[in-house]
Length: 359
Image (cartoon, rainbow, N blue to C red; front, top):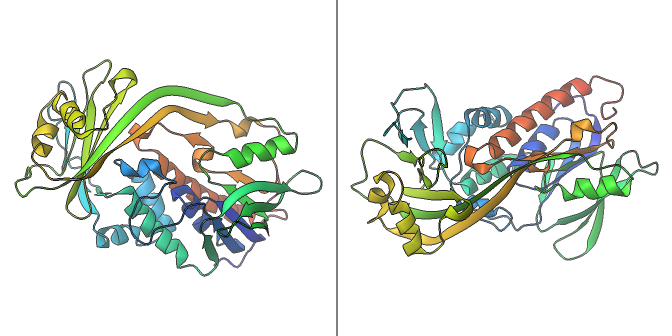
């Protein structure tokens, strides 16, 4: 822990990837960090209701993998030990795009890891829980951020605990990593502060995902495959990557009226009409594990907090509360991890000033 503390207690709302990474960044500069999570957190790499997108293909980009390695030294070794599948980027995945079936392979000199979203979150959560100065409280629903008497900053957070009782925690800093950012919006309204302008980009994407046992006769020349639909619509795409436990996860995606269905026959038929037969040929006789899961994403949203002339002291929107990315590009977890690294650097600089949490 840092010898330069800037506050007694920080509270993080949300124990997803953004909240966990933020908690790690904060603990060097606060005596205690409390993470409030409304879900019951699983003890293994299981899905939970608070992350419906977790049933679909996830990936850590290079920046995200590196950032989590900075926050949690040995993170990549933890992934490997938990069964994540190493992928030589540029070599181990077959990329099929119009005019290139497959795209020429190149060794880009980087080992990525392919695994389920719950496994990534579990590994990060276990690392966070190893710190005695961080407490994760489950089944706690944050209700309100309480202002200071002058309305200029944050004083506490009010929440409902797992027993249905109300509690209030004092806080020098509240990080809103709840996803939607409703806590921040309600707090700004309560103190008479205007809401930030938003940039909204409609994407109207729908996904359907199934998991398979990797067959014994699986293709030897690739570990994962991505098929992109024909330009300009880029309709009917698919991405299949390996998971821990000798499994494949296949996510099919489409936009507007071309979204893949959620029943098995429709899912398989959608895979069959992809631009190339690679994915369909791989899964048509593979053992399916579980049901088909669907997920919809209507729009990317960026809230321009940076344009506000003043902002409450001790309140920090984080992760999706600032910007929800189109998930097709895989930015969400990686950007959240990089935000946490930036937060840690800023706190280190601010710790040297007379008013670390001031303007």
